[in-house]
Amino acid sequence: MTILSAIFLLFLVMDPLGNIPLFLVALRDVNPRRRRVVVARELCIALVIMLGFLAGGREVMRLLQISQDSLSIGGGLILFLIAVRMIFPPEEGIFGPTLEGEPFIVPLAVPLVAGPSSLVTIMLLVSREPDRWPGWLLAILCAWLASAVILLSSGWLTRLIKARGLIALERLMGLILTAVAVEMFLNGVREAFAVVPPAGA
Image (cartoon, rainbow, N blue to C red):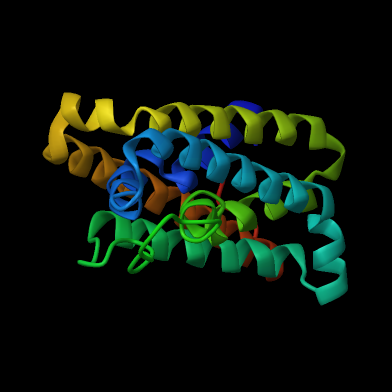
């Protein structure tokens, strides 16, 4: 996987456009003057968590005796479920109902930004090619920065493209993520059972 592909994949699983309505709902009881501060704080917490998984992901896998194939298959399934919920979101939102009051770590940092799909993707990248960790670090920072810009501009974006535009973008990202998830799952199955992909695949 190229660095650009990793950036795009991480951006998709962080789903900043789809998270805008959830962020707005979670921050509805927060003083408007505090909202940007809270969002920036939660984004920084999410970044620290993701960097922690980048640094210690291989050790976690070794400790839990999780193989790369299992992680690829499980990660593909998780991404697929997230993608389906992006395309057909339930009433309570992709990640369920949010808490009242000023949020702290949950649900903004975790699971909306540094969610299961993001963390599994990071662990999968570093476990497959650990020597490329500087590239994966760059990918995480770029995807996080793009997500941060979008989420910090959530109020302005909502006024610009309206709710229907946000919904359409989220559906589109969900469709793309579905294809990525299926490919990740198939790669895990091929490697687990030593299936050689057809020529040109």
